[in-house]
Length: 157
Ligand code: HEM
Image (tube, rainbow, N blue to C red; front, side, top):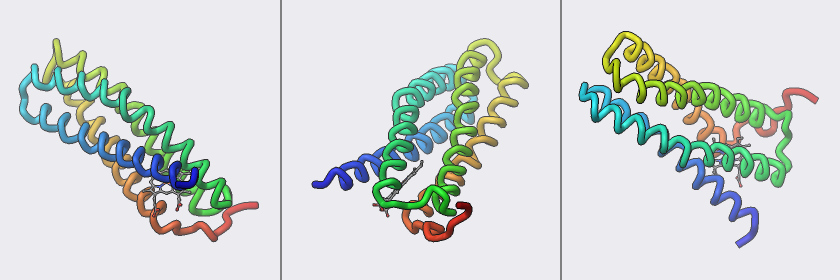
């Protein structure tokens, strides 16, 4: 197996971890929230914070580094519409994800004393509001990865 194929497999595996962990976290957090059970929410939100550090953080780094390496090996231009869109969307996902990590931490602490309070509800709404664009941006990234749409379009010199 060539180094290229190995790096590409790592890139795809880390994409699966990124997307899969995101979906899993969203499902379990929402379930615990909708159950209305304080203890269930506290333990789930704590597990979710740990999962983000353990899986999402390394996957984000691996995704970026392997992605840049693959782009370089394929001689795709950094000025192409494809690359600019991918990096732009990747940054957008990151900008949604960073506050989400903080919100989850805050929610897990808040739930102990103020479960269901207006502040708790506000953070839950914000958490959902940031998750939706991040999820949609991930779908577009998958599309761009598979189709390579815009690779031949140069945006600047
Ligand atoms: C900095 C961001 C990224 C860059 C620069 C990048 C770059 C690349 C490149 C150059 C390829 C082509 C490899 C080939 O065809 O041999 C690729 C494939 C792929 N990437 Fe990314 N990637 C990035 C982020 C992501 C993200 C966030 C995901 C999804 C979560 C993702 C999922 C995939 C998948 C599934 C493939 C395989 C597509 C196929 O072979 O048809 N990538 N990536």
